[in-house]
Length: 98
Image 1: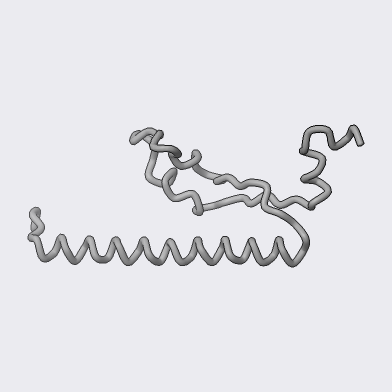
Image 2: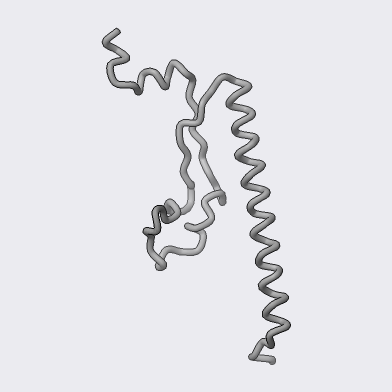
């Protein structure tokens, strides 16, 4: 069994990784575009989202390298929360005082 990888094999492997990330990017972009289209068509607005199976990905340069790799790929199973304009108004301070 070959234990060392030469530079050519490493470059080929890294190229495949970059291709895979581009595929993931395109998939996630399509999901976001679809959510925008559906919410606009139905009169809803985006109100948040979270990953079902993993912790939130690190933000603002913070996070732990001890998190599992799936934590860095939030779209594995993502829940998107939408709300109507009226529901959004209920979240505003002073809305119920009118």
